[in-house]
Amino acid sequence: MTVTDAPKIVTSRWDLEDGYTFARYEATGGYQAIKAALAKPPADVVEEVKSASLLGRGGAGFPAGVKWGFCPPGVFPRYLVVNG
Image (cartoon, rainbow, N blue to C red; front, side, top):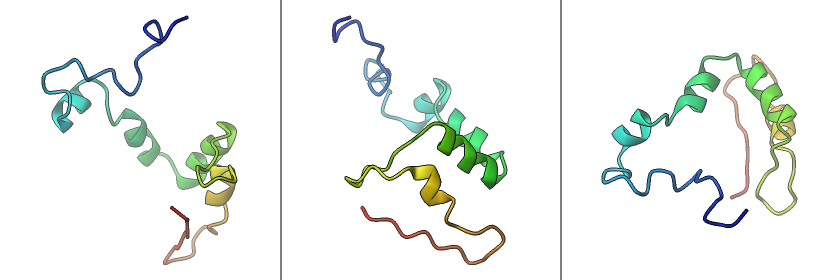
């Protein structure tokens, strides 16, 4: 597989005249993942992130799902401190 054969994930809308607009993004399937996540209970989203083995980008590669799991359920207001 060459670079030109690789599937376009981030750049799939670059060839569209209005590919930079929110309307085009949504019309071509954008926001589906966030809509699905918002429809689930928070604990289910955390478990899905854990099972996907997503890692943080802060250098240490700390598992995102584990960090999200540090927020106790039912405690408000919630604070999650992250470095950026």
